[in-house]
Length: 26
Image 1: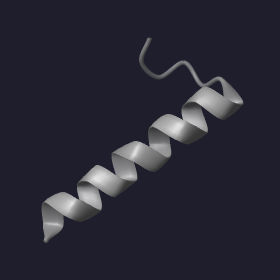
Image 2: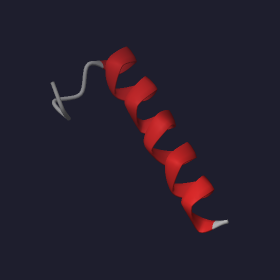
Image 3: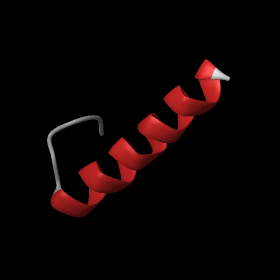
Image 4: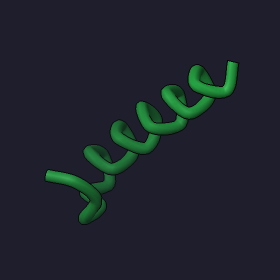
């Protein structure tokens, strides 16, 4: 289930970005 890993990574990245305030996506 590679898509599951990707999904999880994206979710974690989103949470981290919103927490630290990285200039990722609006």
